Image 1: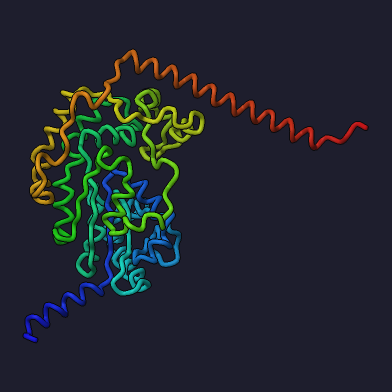
Image 2: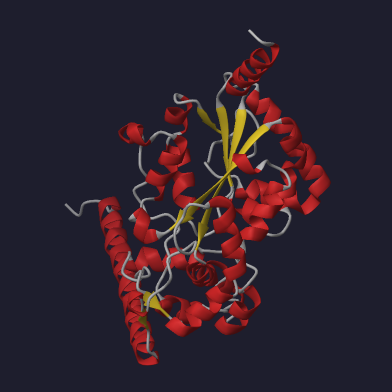
Length: 359
C-alpha cells in the first residue's frame, strides 16, 4: 500500500474512534427547552446509541438535567477560572465513554454575543468539537425575546426593540465567533421554522443525530416547554418590578398558567407589529442573513428565511388588546376563587374527620 494511502486510512480510522463533544448552542427561542427536556428524559436511551448527556455541572456522577445554561452563566462571571473548569471537567467525562462515542452538552447562552463561547477556547484546541446551532427569523426571535426577557425589565416595548434590533439574532456574528474556535465543517446550522417543523423540534434534532428511525424508542416531553403567553398577558404584567425579581423570573407566568391553563398561551398568528414594521426589522439583518445563506446554505433557493406575508399575522387592535386583558383579569379571579373554595372544602373535610363522634 502506498505510504500516502496508508496515512489517509490511518487518519480516518483515528477520526472514527476519537471521542467527541456535541455542543447544542441554541439559539434562544428556537425550541432549546424542548430539546433539553428530551435529553433529560432519554439520557439512558441515548447512551445506548453512543450519545452521553453531560451532567448539569460537567462533574461525573452529578445530576443530568439536560441543560447546562445556568452552569455556564455562572462560569462566565470569571472567564479565566471558567475556561479552566471546562478544560478540566470535559476530559473527565470523556474518559467514561467508549471510543467513538459522543458527549452531549446543551446551553443556548453559548450562542449569545457576550463571550460565553470563550469558555471552550482551551477544549477546542484538544478535543473534537461539533457545534449545532438553530437559527430563527429575527422578527419572530425579537418578539419572543421581548416576552421572555425584555418585558420583565421595562414597560416600553419600542425602546427595548430599538436597542435589540440588529444585534440580537445577528447569526453571522455568532457563527464567526464559533468559527474562530471550531473548523467550519464541524458547525451545523439548522433553521427553526415553526411551519416547516410542524412544531416538532425534537424530530428535527433526532434527524441531526441520525436517530429519526429510532424515535419510538424515546420518551417525548408531554408539556409545552417554556410556553409563550398572549399579548394581553404581556401588556398586563410588563415592566412591573413587583412581579419580576429579574429577567429570568418566570413565577408570574407560572402562576397565570396554573390558574388559567393554556387559555392565554400565545396564538401563532397573534402580532403587535404591522407587516411594514416587520419588514423594517428584517432589513437590519439582510447582509448578515445573506452571509449565512451563502456560507451554510449555498444550494438554498431564495432568501435564508421565508419572507413574511401580510396574511400570516393578525395584528391586535388596541380595543382587542383591552378586551383580552379584561378577560384575563376575570379568568385569574375565577381561577383563584376556585382554588380558595377547593381549599376551604378540603380543610373542612379534614377538620370533620378529626372531630370525635358525638354519640
